[in-house]
Image 1: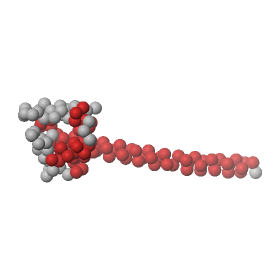
Image 2 (image 1 turned 90 degrees about the horizontal axis):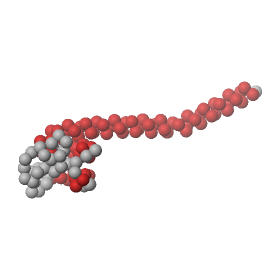
Image 3 (image 1 turned 60 degrees about the vertical axis):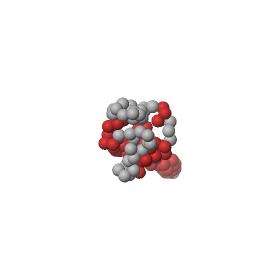
Image 4 (image 1 turned 180 degrees about the vertical axis):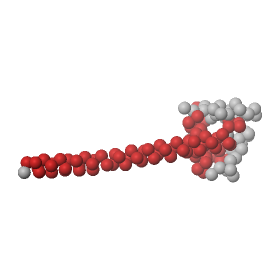
Length: 125
């Protein structure tokens, strides 16, 4: 009888441990999937940046790649990085009046703009 009570107690304890840790396992998978998705979005943002933005803003986003007046924005500067995501996305979409920054609304999807924004945020790190 003693052996079966111990077995029962161990079985219950193991069952409780599985129930308690199961949410943590799925959260780990979820965070892994999120990290993987962000990695691919960042890589796509880099590809799009190189295709559409690098010519003027340069490889590092410093704004010194193309000689125009006013010069292209330094995307790594605090002035740019402190702007909201909505402001920066709007600039990508509509361009910037009085500068060489043109509109990309006909070329880039909303997802493309979000991926470029993600990459621009990473340039400052």
